[in-house]
Image (tube, rainbow over all chains, first blue to last red; front, side):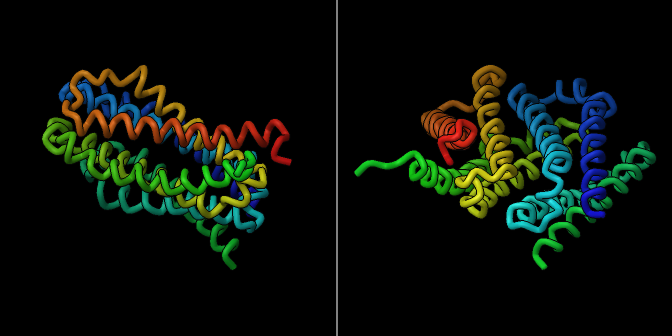
Length: 133
Length: 147
């Protein structure tokens, strides 16, 4: 069961990665970033690329190291804890930090992403807790 | 006294783990020193919040790299498959960061002064060391020398 769930989580990670390629267009990064200094613009885009890389790595772990993640070993538990912490920290940002106006404007995307976040955080937290028990 | 490659990599991993937390010390100074507050005020609120979120998650990722390296020191040195996967990712992460600094950042509007030059050199040296330790470990294990 946990193996299947972790593979689904891997797939959700890939969808999040895909969404991050569409995001700059939706949020009009180019036009917006023209207003700031080149230094900040470059740092912003590098951070964006690095977040994509990290989430892609999470997908890679879920697909190719599924048994390690589900097995409850020290290593698997440490990795699940890291990924769970990453997504658990992202949840309150989605719900309480980002502007309601933007979430209303992109209602479907907001609900879809919130559901995906909750599901991914829950599975990874469960996998991490299983490892600690 | 001669050190074996295993002993050097073992020490390198301990230092790399600690090194990540040193990077965080520099990271926390970036928003203030580069005057992000006034620059970010020009962005739409959502993009501004996105930037802070990216920054926060980059900090979280670097802290996790440090913690994972210290916690999984034995597994990495032993060459466990998943541990090497993490080491490879961390190595590529920092190698890419060096490339970004060399070929993408244009540095023209970066703050001037000796403190920034020294800080930049030290940070780049640390990135090189980190990439070297992790990718060196992966190469050592992949080449079968670790067994």
